[in-house]
Length: 426
Image 1 (tube, rainbow, N blue to C red):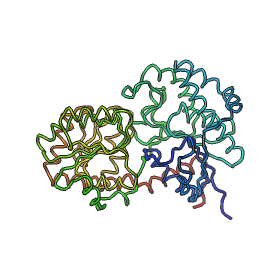
Image 2: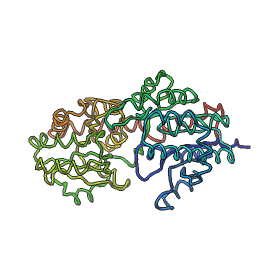
Image 3: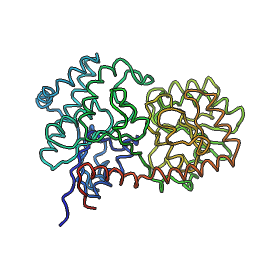
Image 4: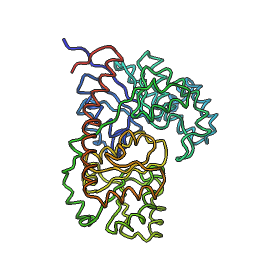
């Protein structure tokens, strides 16, 4: 007789699209767990625009619920149960509208999750990202219903006001709350050693964190992807292609690439720069700046592209850049995807990037927010075909050996089983 499935509830697990790092990871991991002895339930913020968007997850056995709730009486009842969270929010001096939205989100996650815990046999509650939000909801329910609590942390252990300032007065007001949440957890995970160290800001030892990297599909992201359609669409033949792929926001550093572009063009006149990703508020400023620099058709802002097109963009490039400007980034999944496609990476020597890019082997690490340093290494790679090939091959090998998503999903499965001291049916 087979063992019963392990009940897993993931709170605020975003599912794609859009394809951010967490969503991309969960898009593979949740179905994997559902087919390896787990009864998987996940709470997402709100229903998708297209109801069919999550059909594939449901077919794999993943149950999906929505955190949005319009039951004002239920929200009011739950808010009365969380005085520490409310007092922390009030002390943070957030605006009334912001606090109201946050309270509704927390209450929604707790309300829907509580229904799942009461009606399904849940063993583990796993929160992703913000400990003071999703983590608080998970901790509250785990304590109330005696469940195992797992928290995965990323670059923001406490909230902050400015995108480019990692720790500030607002974050200081959340330290006590976050410390209590993390102390309650049975297991703390992080996707990089860099982000594991973040818990020191709330007075906990990084050694409490188990690092398990996020992986990618190394069969889908590979060097021999067909790039003919993209090369034709953007007239890339005969060009040296520098690619930025990610959210177009200041902390990701597209503005650093823009300032480096004229310096690169002095040495590599046939260089072209592709910026692929959703605008997070700075695209208009970047376009205006590109116009001032007279870059014309050399600096192309292409907006977001469907996930199925991304391997071709990586494969069509000559160099991938990850010019991050803050310590918030945990790992840089796009750098791994670029390496899997056989491309050298020039990334900032900050946050989790050095855990991915081996300086001088799979690419180069440069000083953050330094256009001159970025331009120098990108130009060096564009000038040297053999160096690009060697570093690209080394990157491919590293991606396959260290960041294969199937191997890393098995690692998470083993951590869950160790936590419960049972073996799931496989």
